[in-house]
Length: 182
Ligand SMILES: CC(C)(COP(=O)(O)OP(=O)(O)OC[C@H]1O[C@@H](n2cnc3c(N)ncnc32)[C@H](O)[C@@H]1OP(=O)(O)O)[C@@H](O)C(=O)NCCC(=O)NCCS
Image (cartoon, rainbow, N blue to C red; front, side, top):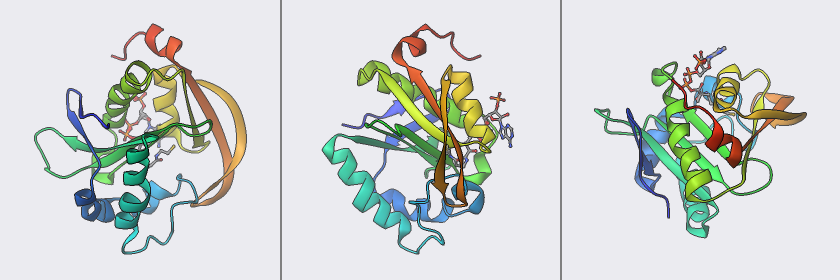
């Protein structure tokens, strides 16, 4: 139900329990979690990744309402370098994070390209809504470059506390009409 996806530099594979140890190593960094929802436990418990994959990601994928991919760089390392996910629902349809070592190379924009294509033209979804802390400029930039529109600003709870969040929306029509990024 979660297809393997490929881009020029990346392979996206369905997340599995075997990914939990690397996820546990790369994910719990303040620079990564501070802009994430306060549902992320912080300080991150020693079994945080295992619990998350086993109790949230895998059941969601089995229900057919969530799609989680490990992001892997072609040519190594052999383990994941980040995670991207989609979920159905009115509020929050996509999430992502990248290990600190791999930031700043537009890798997430590339992963998003494949995942968005799946969301709109594989699953046939009409719109994608995402929220991001106003101060999360890198995440905002990804939505801007995708052609998403800012539709609302509201307060949300983040690991770093209550903060204003921007709600961005991208429609299938706009996705398919946009010129591809260079
Ligand atoms: C958001 C995230 C996935 C971006 O991944 P990335 O592959 O490193 O993205 P890039 O470094 O290519 O940056 C994307 C854009 O933001 C810009 N950017 C990056 N850091 C920035 C900063 N601190 N201030 C302003 N712009 C910034 C980049 O220049 C780039 O813009 P461009 O494509 O016009 O050049 C990564 O920062 C991350 O994992 N953050 C922590 C988790 C998180 O916030 N997830 C999203 C929650 S909504």
